[in-house]
Image (tube, rainbow, N blue to C red; front, side, top):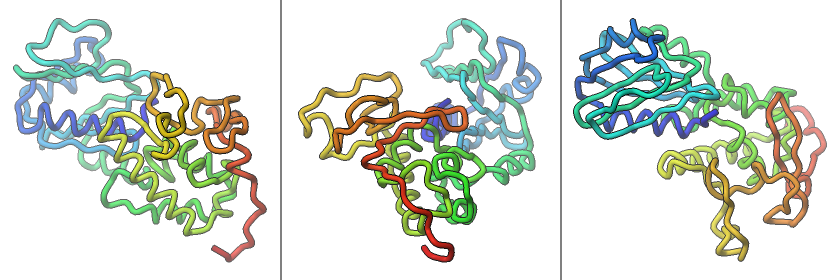
Length: 278
């Protein structure tokens, strides 16, 4: 499933290609035919993203709300648009560009109020300027749930997925099984600030890179990572390989039906923090 930086990048890409222009909208697959008919010929006035939810605004007509889920993808191209191939749920097109959406979990036309209801149930998003991590900390700082699970809870922190979860905990030397309430406020502040910086880089570069300059392949004399999912990482999908820092074996385990990755030496377990400290 795409992480939040991808959705924010899609919001910017749609606005750049179609913003302020009247667009043709269709649903070659047919599953969004009624919604597409209502926005066909309308101007794309705005785009928005929150966590893993994308919103395309068409003024008084409403917003197309999209959640890509596990299998959803967008394909952009230059106009004129070719004949659609496969199950295209939504096509937006002008004479200069087109975008095809396939396989989303959600693609629906919603009102302003329905859009706000989605925002209200989501947690702080590191890529939304108005969010500062305080609401997330209010939830995390009193929870017995592991920080690894909390970072994937979209009601606590919106947009963080498996890669950013694994990498930010490694970068701060935090055992993923540490309960949220056993973190200090300063530790959470450092995690939040790091997520903001890493995910902004993800939007800008359209890929995930989490390794500091001194640990890059050219600095350490090691082969670069070869993976379709992104750039250089410390532990994500590196199970049983040596840690870049300590040389110990990277571990993996199942947590809430997702694979967890961490280095036990660099992220050692800690005793519970006494209540009222932090």
